[in-house]
Image 1 (cartoon, rainbow, N blue to C red):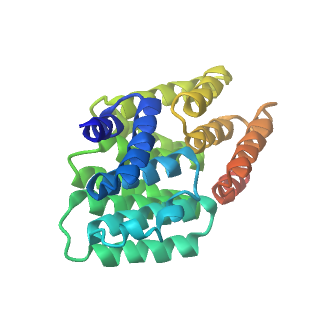
Image 2 (cartoon, rainbow, N blue to C red):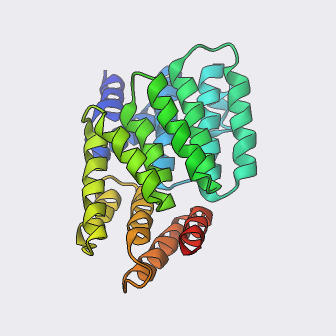
Length: 273
C-alpha cells in the first residue's frame, strides 16, 4: 500500500529530506484515512523528526488529540520521550524530567528495546541541556555496549555532548568509539565532521562552515549544525579572530529556533577558566 511504502521510505531512506517528506506525507494521509495503526507509527517518527529539525513545539501539538487516546502504553512512552527531548532542547529541564519520568512509568513491564533506548536518548538530551556533558557522553557510550542496533543514532548523542563541551578529551573518547562502528550514513557524516574539526585545529574553518551548512540545508537539522559550529569554535585559540564570532553565530542560531543556550554558555565558561 501507499502508506506502507511511505513508512519504509521514512524509516529506511538514507536521504534525510526524502525520509522527512515521506513521514510528513504518511502522517497526513493516515490521519485523513483514519488509519490508526499507520497513524501511530507515523506520529512517532514525525515527532522525532520535528525535534531533530528544531521544531520543538511540534510533539506537544498532538498530545491531546483524541485520535491517540487509545494508543498502547508503548506508543505513549515513546511520545513522552519526544516531549521530554523537546522540553530539554528548549531549556525547560524540569518539565523534561517530569515527562521522562512519565515515559519510564508507562514503560514498566515492557521489554521493548526501542522504548528503552528512546528513554535513554531523552535522558542524554537532558544531560546535554544541563551542561552535564561527561554524564551524557558516558551514558551514550554505555548504551552502545548494550544495544546491537541503531549505533549511528546512539553515537549522535555522544557526539552532541563531546562537541558541545569543546573538551578535547571528550572528543577523543567519542572519536575512538566512532572509529569502531560500522560505517552507516550517520557514522560516515560524523567522521567527516571530525575531519573538518581537525582542519579547525590547524586554522582552517572553511570545512567546518561547509559541514554546518550541510546539516542545515541537506540534513535538515539546524540544532545539529549549531552543536558542530560551537564545537569548532571552542577548538580555536582564545585569540583567534573567528572564535568569538563563531560562538556568537551559534548562540544566534539557537535563539532563532528557540533552542536553549545554556549548554553554549556552560561550555564557553569552562573553556575560559
